[in-house]
Length: 477
Image 1 (tube, one colour):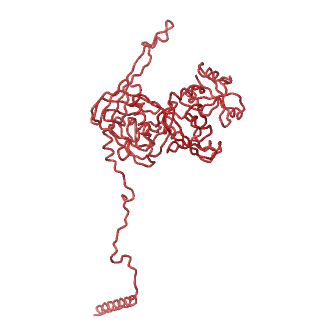
Image 2 (cartoon, rainbow, N blue to C red):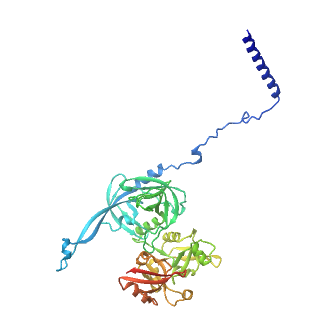
């Protein structure tokens, strides 16, 4: 009975307490975060809302059928002796025999017309004795080489077929850094391979072509390519061709994160030239130029790093006739900004002789527009031969009066352009002023040509750089 009474009293006290508390707060109003009539939406994180992955399926489906596998056959010639020990005989010297060893290389190509025209890299087919093309549907053809251009590392070949799938040209000038792209090719003989990445840089010069006048203004991507991808397609998400894959930056020879493609606007120019004229129609500005970096800008007192510095103007050339002067800074051609030598080469590389352009140069604090008509290679050579000297890949000119006074010399030749050759291999840089060869002063063009072309063996070259540094180079001629 006591237990029952105790439970009853506890319940009674609890009920009374609840009534008391309710009485105290019955007139209080609380904020309702979800009033009636207002829809409630969950706010959990949705990854697809923050970042929409592009759809590559359509672009890949278009591209794989227009990218081909290329097998090139080559012949390596070497001189051998039938009997190795005959070489050491003291009698008549034995004559070596020519030995030809065949080898092959693999690459990729892109069909750019239904009539069987295919663009690829020059290094894939140059000097090949036979080129075999395999389509994505496994049909095999023998190809003929229409033309090769080492200065852009491009080549045009053709197979006898019609109604082929092909890629349409995009516009590489409109390609943006960060844009998604696909690389399509045949790495390691794995046909019809597609990889994806983004454009990580433009107008990249990686100094792999070497020849004087080479056009290097690559599109850099992080789409994986490897040996065998050379000549393959770089396409945007719409399936348009925006570049031809050409190289990778790697210490091992395999992909490590950086790939380079030739812009399609240069590709289109080379292809059209070969199809219409059978050779490249190269246009020239008629200037010697210099990249403007921070150090060069400080030397010249420039506050702006834009443009390309005009180091010299070829007399009678396009720029000279248009009114360009030595010391001008070229900042624009038509509507294309020119912020470096790679961009300059890319813009001019898309033009034809006799094209009319409008250039903008910065001079004496002002931007000046000048109409200009581009000249042909033949005109450029004719003008260059009048006063310029080209030896071992280097372009020389005599020092001006101002330069002689500046360096306190009365002779010498300045290197205004430097391509692959013995001088570049020795470490000589553009801008170097050559004063003497084997202690003999270089006073005339005849002295220079005699010293660098009519001798063999070790040669000592002495000169000075624009910053005043005197340097000696020992080279083998």
